[in-house]
Each structure stands twice: as C-alpha cells, then as structure tokens.
Length: 237
Image (cartoon, rainbow, N blue to C red; front, side):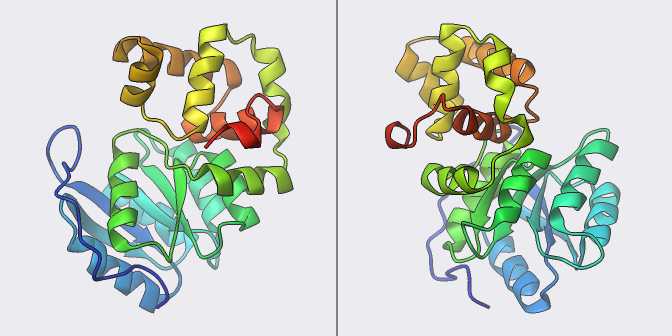
C-alpha cells in the first residue's frame, strides 16, 4: 500500500483525557490498505483498533455495534460512500464517534463534503503513521484536524451551502478572534494563551461560535469562515 511510514517514531503521547486507549474502527474498501493501517496503528501507543469495515454500510453497522471513539473513514467505498456513512452515523448514534476522513489526495472534493457532514477532520494516506495516530488521538480529545493550506484549496474549489451563515451569525469581536485562531489549527489551550484568556473562556467562545454558525464541529466552522471571507488565505496558517 502507498501510505503510512512504518519506520516513523511514535510519540509517547497520552491516549485520551481518561488515560485509557483510544478505540478505533478503520473503514476502507481496499483490504491491503485496511490491513496495513490496522497493523501500523495498533502498534502506536494509546490506540486500540477494535474493528474494520469494508464499505460504508458496514462502517455504520460496526461503529454502532463496537462504539469506537474514532472512525478512520475512507470516502470512496462501495454500497455507501464515506460521506453518507458519516452523515448517517452522526445522525443516528446517541453518542457518535469522531470521524476522521482518510484520503489519498488532499484536493479530493469528497473531503469538503465529509467535513460538512460532520467529520472532525482529514488526514492523507501518505502521512507517516505517527501523524495519522496523532490525528486519531486529537480527534478523540474533541479537537479538529486541519491542514489550513489544503483546506483553503478545497473550500475555494467547492463552496458549501452554509457559506453565508457567518454574516447572519452576529459573532462578537472576541468570537471572531477565536474563529480565526481555530482556522490556523490552534487548539483551545493555544488559543487561550494567544488571547490571554482562560481555557474555560475559550471553550465558551468556541461553543457560542458553533451554535451561532449552525456548525456541527470546529472543522465545519472553519470551512464556513473560509467561505464567508472572514479568514483570508494569505493570513491564516
């Protein structure tokens, strides 16, 4: 398979907020890719691979049965693609997992649609396995996985229907600052440090931004910010 670098060193990072391993379901229709990801990610600290799925229908069924923390979701799969599987999974599950889209090409138009459907972010199959593992951990912790330059290119090519949400959202000045910081891929602690406010204050602002934008998660909010023009490509990330 063309993808994760098995020789890459894995960081001795915490698994999640509770200290327990992050449970992961891998959905990809290519058996070689799926098996390779399972082997490599299972060897990473803080991650337990609990299952595999070969298509979108199977991904939803397995996720609802196994209840993993994170689903690593390919987009181009038979029976049901990763976008529809993500949308269904997030809509029908009482406590849905985080979904991280994994794709071969960073300009894959499906990825933008998946982010709009509620995915927490995306990673590229060619990344070193340690980076994919870190993305899984970050998603499990409730943060977004963003690559601003690539995201800007995709959003520019495929505007979202929600693009006009920002002008109607009536964000405060501070909320706009937080949204701009989110667009650079900053975590909540990093935003708190840069704006010199408490972590709880940042969490409150992030929650208000998501509610006002009608965004499903941080990544979707950032997509809206780029589409609305609040975030200018040359100024973020």
